[in-house]
Amino acid sequence: MVTAYVALGSNQGDRRAHLRSAVAGLPGVQRVSGIYETDPVGGPAQEPFLNCVVELETSLGPHELLARCQQLEEAADRVRDVRWGPRTLDIDILLYDDVEVATHDLHIPHPRMAERRFVLRPLADLAPDRCPPGWEERLPADGVHRVDDL
Image (cartoon, rainbow, N blue to C red; front, side, top):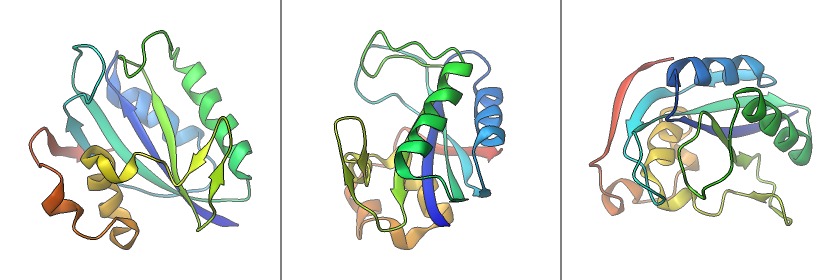
């Protein structure tokens, strides 16, 4: 068994329901961060996201976990027609124990994790020691605020 952290985001449809459904479909959920409403980063103009991070204890390998995440996105009718565009559900594997993966379809740790307050703020709810030192001072706080628990 390994400990993995995955980030979830949604800015289309019933955002909270998409997050709840994804959490219910993930293997070995241990804890879920608070929910944060965040301004979109990059991409076209779009509605705000709801984001959270989930801690898993899983026996799935990294690529098996990726496949499960993609199944959940597909079940939420995720459309991939615009890079960083609006989406019903986005799931990214952030960390998988201390394993590093660099393949054409998967990079762990997530390569842009350290640049994204909307990822680090909920990750810090669960595992502050897994966040890069000084991230709170380095990344602007505007556009990311806690709204609730899932």
